[in-house]
Length: 318
Image (cartoon, rainbow, N blue to C red; front, top):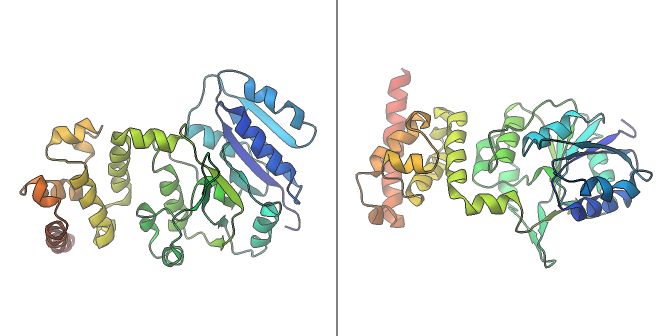
C-alpha cells in the first residue's frame, strides 16, 4: 500500500459547526488520498448545507438517515459504507491536531503485521484546556495479555484515535453506549489483532456538555446496566483475574446494591445477573453498607470472597 485510500467515517448529529471544523482539519492534511463518509442522524438539513462548500474540495459521500439510526448503529452504518484500504470512525466533535496526522497513520501501516493503529489519547475542553487521558504505559504494553483491563482504564481512547484495515469486519455492539468502545477494542485484541501505538497527539478529542459521555454520567443506571452486560460477555473465567473481580465488587458496593430491586432500578433483571456477580451480591449483603465502604475491611472481604470463588469454580470444573 504505497498510497492507500483512507475512509474517514463521520456519524453526525446536529451541531454542524463541529463537522465543519473536522473537514477543515482534513483539508489541511498533507496526505490527500481520502474519502469522507458522513452518516447524518439530524432531523434537519443543517449539516448537509454546512458541508456543501466542501463537496468540491474533498471526496464526500453524504447519507441522511430518516428516521435516525442512533448511536452506535449510526457508527456501524458509516463504517459499512467505507471503500478505503484504511478506515477510521471519526466523531464529529473531534478533529486532526497535526497536518501530518494521516501520514503518520499510513507510515505505521507500512508494517504488514499491524492491523490497527492508535495515537496518544488527548482531549480539549470548551475552554481550550488540554488533557492527556489514561496515559498508562504499562497497560498499553500488556493489552494482548490483559485485554479485559481496558474496563479498568480505557487507554486506547475514543474511536477517532484509532485507524484500522478495512478488512477487519468487527462492528460495534449496538446494545452499548457507555462501554461500546471498550467492548469493541477487547474483541479486536481477543482476535489476536496486532496494534501499533503512536506516542503523539494526532487527534484532538473535543469535550463538551452535549456528549453521550456526559449523558451517561448523568444517568448512572446506564453505566451499571452495561457493566453487568459486559460481565456476561466476559464470562466467568475472566473473574479469575483479581482486578476484574475487584472492579465488580466495587461496582456493587458503590451502587448500593442490596436487593434484587436495586438491580431492577438500574435496568438489570434478575435473569441477566451472571452467577459470579450474584454470588458476590449475596456475600456483600452479610455486611452493612457502612462497613463495606471502609476501604481496609472491603479489601479483606473482597479477597476472602475471591479466594473462595476461585476454589469453588475450580472444584466445579473438575
